[in-house]
Image (cartoon, rainbow, N blue to C red; front, side, top):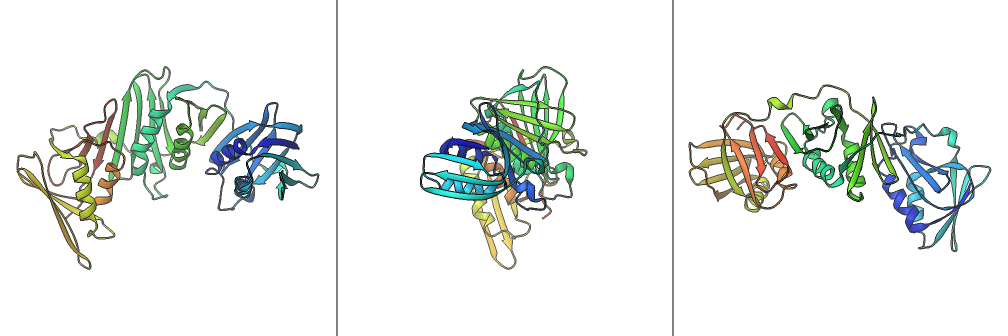
Amino acid sequence: MNFIVSKSVFLKELNSIQGVVERKNTIPILSNLLLETNDGGISIKGTDLDLSIITGCEAEIKKPGAICVQAKKLFEIIRALPESEIEVKCTEQDQVLLTCERSKFKLVGLSKENFPEVNSFAGPFTSLPASLMNTFINRTVFAITNEESRYALNGAKFELSELGVRMVATDGHRLSFIEKVDKFYEGEKVDVLIPRKTLSELTKLSAEANGVLEFGKDDNHLYFKVDKRLLCSRTLSGQFPNYELVLPKDKRTPVVFENARLFSAIKRVALMADEKSHSIKFELTDGQVRITSQAADIGESEDILTTDYSGPAITIGFNAQYLLDFFSVIQDGDVIFDLKDSSSQVQLRSALESGYDFRYIVMPMRL
């Protein structure tokens, strides 16, 4: 194999695939990329067996072929080279020679036969707005559990139907729900669990999309395509909780807060919260909320904000980090807390989330 490629073009595609490559080296070949020539240039494949990316770039092909190269080291070398054309040549001993101006590198390669099969997908694909997928992931990924043993909760539930699109994530203590009602799709309802790592890579993929991201699926895999890049992911198996039961349906008292003021107050009070529980307390009375925290070995803090609340006094505890996660993804403006009492789940909404139905449910803490 022998080809000449532009540094900037090659580096961009190598960068897009780094997050997929397996770094733990439990299976050495998974820390490699497969470089392979084709009619228009080269294809680049990376996989950790659960998640794969196929991409490529234009190149001048002098001799066709294929080779596996250590992904991280190749990326570091190409990034360090001057802005110029790079010649890549493979020897019969599977060594990879890189030449760029006066710089030369020799890397140990592996035969193509060592690389696992990477799924491809011919279609059909459904076109979705890339900005919609970015917003959906941004509004849900932080609520995914960090406990690997809770397998079905290690991703987000994605539903696509003729009525619109939904995404839901939960860790058992909080739940994030977002929906867009629109005619994106015609066909049988899609109901799948997308793993956290896939969502992370999908964010990068959709960020570079020119308006549209294409989605497809088969029995066990999901496919997301942007231009020449194809991301393939295994679906998560398992039973996702019935999130409909968690969404409040009874009458609630909406309490409106100014986003920036409440966010700042929670951040300040959380500085003195217990480091394990992150517990803070809201005490709602007519016209104001008193936010407090205390830790026996640190001290205590208090902040008081005015609000439009009018009703019986409510004292309720929250994990401060759960609230801060919500504030980190919403727009400026007002925030609405839908409250019932001190022991029922609380629903948080942003007054400016026009076009989306975004709801964040938090279970109260015991005080």
